[in-house]
Image (cartoon, rainbow, N blue to C red; front, top):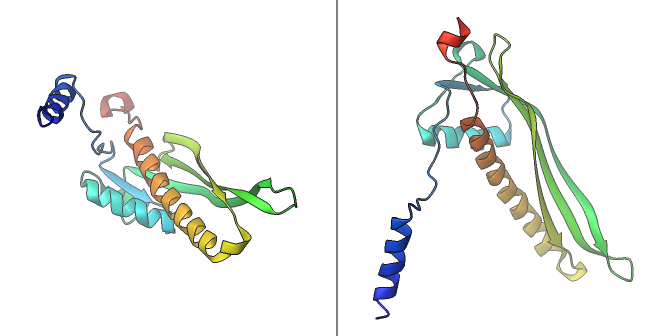
Length: 164
């Protein structure tokens, strides 16, 4: 009976149409990523893995251009102990961008993605907390790339008939 329960659960999930979200293809045949920054390298790697969009070497060769308008990391005090020592920090990671072509059409107008994580702090574990902060920022970068890919996949491109 216990072996039958997982099989029944899998059958129910399959019957309701549940399916894991796969990678969405980008609507651009070619994309130029304007600047060479760390997030851009991760984004390029993920776009190459999709395999549906070519990464152009110059904006003239690309159907769309992704331009970074700014990237910032912030660390703010979130809470203090009764003795005035920091107990928690709030880490935030902001990325502003736009996607356009060389004719001036905006595929994605200037937009900003903001990610926030809270981290506890202890004076007796400073090195461990610094490494945890580095790992959180790395995780936020990976999350940022995934959100960027979802926004790029949702971009609307005018058909050739609408342009002419």
